[in-house]
Structures are given as C-alpha cells and as structure tokens.
Image (cartoon, rainbow over the protein chains, first blue to last red):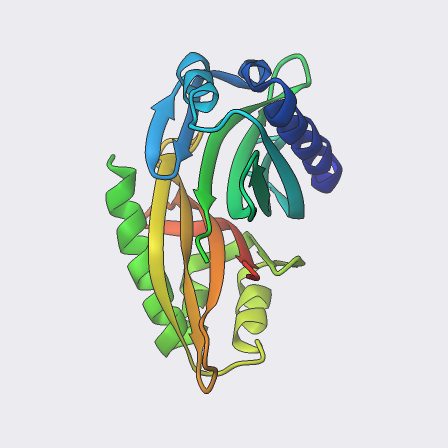
Length: 123
Length: 123
C-alpha cells in the first residue's frame, strides 16, 4: 500500500467536500470517530458534522501546503498530516492550519476517520 | 486512561530531552518507528536518532503552545498533536512548528513512538 497515494486522494476529497458541502463529511466518520477542533473534543459522526457545520463561517477555501503520511499499526490504517491555509469569505488574510487524520480501512475497502485533530497556527 | 495526562508527560519529557540530550531520544523509538521530518522519511530508532542528532542546529529550545490528545485504536495507544515554537541558538526569531506522535504502550507499561511527523509552519 502506498500511503501517500491514499493520503493525497483523501485530502483532496476531504477539503473539497468541506469547502462545497460540509454536511457531506458525515460519510467519512463513524460512531467511534473523534474530532478535536481548536481544543474542543467531539465524538461520533453526527456530533462531528454538527460541529463542523456550525462553525462561525459559512464559505471557506482550504489550500494545502504539505501532505505527509505513514502507515499506522493496523493493516491498512494510515496517519495523514496536513498543513495549509484556510481562506474565509470576506477576510483579507488566510489563516494557517495544521490537521492530522488517522484513517482506518472499512470492510468495504474504503477509509473512515478515527482520529481528527485541527489547529490554527496563529502567526 | 486520561490521554491528556499521558500526552502532557510525554511532551514534557520529549522536548526537554530533545533540548538537552538529543541522543537520549533513542529510548522512545523502536525498530518499527517512523519519523517524517520536513517531508524526509526515516525508519527505526537508530536511523531516527541519527537524523535528529545531525540536524543543522546544535542548541535549541522548544516552547509548547498547545497539546491535544485522543485515544487511538489499540488499547492504551494515544495520538498526541503539538504546536509550539522552536528557538535556535543565535537566531532572532523562533520558528513555529506542528508535530504529531502516535504512542503505543509497551509490555512494560511505558510508551514508545510508532509515528512521528514534524513540520515547520512557515509564516
């Protein structure tokens, strides 16, 4: 398994979905999924999507700077580490962010997010 | 298990060792450990410590801004996500960085680093 190929495909799908149809991210999480967003902990696909769709900005555009990946401990589980910029509609300057995902393979050979940690990197 | 308690203790130990006795980090890695440092992939405790001790700066000081943690998929495995500043000796400005660790518990009830990804966050 080339984790970089999976990681790039996941990252492209994740952020394009975030920027165009945030509620569509629900399919990437399951009941045991965890999100820590700027220090706030949320668990479960429904709660995570509620959190993401209620962030205090509606339109945004992620642009990705780096994608790193490594295999994790389970067969076909992957760590993905992303850095990039988050441009909010109406704001002059983009915000820098870092985010990590721990992806586990499902019985259907797709992946879901077990761990998701997001932080803005304040300059 | 309170992952935040383990994460804080690990982070304090990791960066104080990095700043005072970098070779001492060897005990935190094993043969299957992986480090991706600014996109460069290294595997195995010995190779990782060789990489860390041959970085182009000798003296440095990490200061930590945020520590996030979540349980991972194995019993007693933990994801740790860190942001902070890295001050190099003789440099005027600190560098911002983000780093994630995937910690697995050993049979001796300590932890070792399976996954380690480090990135500078260029302003």
